[in-house]
Image (tube, rainbow, N blue to C red; front, top):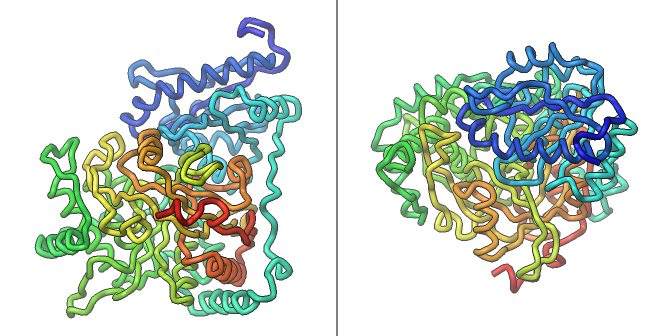
Amino acid sequence: MTHDQPATGPEIILVASGDSRLAANQACWPAQQALEEIVTRTFAEQGRRIARGHPVDPALGHGFIDGQARGIEIFRAIDPEAPLIVAESCWQYTSNVLAGLTRHRGSILTLANWSGQWPGLVGLLNLNGSLTKAGIKYSSIWSVDFTDAFARDAIAEWLSSGSIQHDRSHARPLTDDLIEAGLAPDRDRGAELGMALVKDQAILGVFDEGCMGMYNAIVPDHLLHKTGLFKERLSQSALFAAMQAVTAARGQAHYAWLRAHGMRFELGTNEATELTARQVLEGLRMYDAAVRLAHQFGCAAIGIQYQQGLKDTCVASDLAEGLLNNPDRPPVNGDDGTTLFAGLAVPHFNEVDECAGVDAVITDRVWRDLGLDPSNTLHDIRWGAHVDEGGVNEFVWVFEISGAAPASHFIGGYAGAVGERQPPMYFPKGGATLKGVSRPGEIIWSRIYVEADALHMDIGRGGVVRLSAEETTRRWEATTRQWPIMHAILYGVSRDQLMAKHQANHIQVVYAPDATTARRALVRKACMARAMGISVNLCGDIEDSLDRHQAPEHRT
């Protein structure tokens, strides 16, 4: 069937939600054009015609919806009964289309290319999590080029029924019968920790919320309060002001500490395109100020928005964020000379993802209770591909975040870390990343999300494998080479099961020293969350171990 053959059903409207940053939309537009051509051809082959719901703007050089007001205007002209596709090849602000989608009555399909380049997968997962939170019905599909049977069959299902039923059998509600008898003490201890937090209460420091249109990352106060957590609403302008009070000597001291611990920085002199010493020191002053403000307001964790506001004011927050997430970090002293949060992390939820903030507090308390390193972070679920090397022959995810991962997660720790300049397209003021390759080991992954006006947690186990330098470089070049990377396998959860069930662009990860401890820690964490009123799903195979996926001799 060609594009010119008659359609066998109503015209399908296609919209494309984009970034709010012009440079990003312009850079990503060729990939979006390629995706839309594939989608138009794929649906034509099934007898359906695609019509774009909004024009390309030649003056701007792209055809994305680039703001909430523009999205509302566009959806006013779209038939609310029409079948609708939201096609994504890049990061997108869900707020650009959310208002229109809340009133759309026709079937909705969210769709992305299977590529790590910009990336559409991250945008898709954020959109899906936001629609779930908003109670908007949708179906979703993903593919490299939509020639595979999985994608074709799903599209045919959507065209015939208005929905797609994916396999989500990997997730089952946490019940006591799923916890083996030997882990009963961890079940009970987790419940004790959860009830203690509900009783004693704690604070999340929120430096402006709603980052990058991530509606799914905002936890309504009435849900948060039930868990014992409360928001201290802080301003990024207060953080910037506090940075100005940090002396140059303190910034230099933090830099000297990092250098003494082996961290490298790729420095240049061109502020527009290279990482400069001035940028690094400004980022370390942000780190110092963030610790002080967390102490001042009694925060159990903090989140800095950065991408809106600070991106036009100062360097990136990621170096500061990675340091905050690690108990082993440059010491910050209070006015009386005592070290603030001595021996502790100051858990940071990147991009003010409050769901990740709740998770970080739970993780920090459980891991410290077990006497383990509590360093944890979120990553973007960036992309993934099958690997056949180094004893690994299966699908391996690329988890990658903009630099906020702690050095304790890296091969070599700080000595394996390097600071590179953030990409100018997203970070006009520059600033250092905290880049490294995550070390092989057992991990627990999780995600807290909002659905049906309640908090939920999906949690499972996985392992980080070591890949060759060549494969790691290939993956960096296919995504963002300046950012820290994790080569992750999720036990008992396939690529498509995770994509179908996961309700966020972010995934929380933390290490455990071995498989036995990982099982204990997972049970404690899941039961702590349950005691806080969060509905918990166990995902995949929690009995698996990394040794079944990569032998120890390949991990050294």
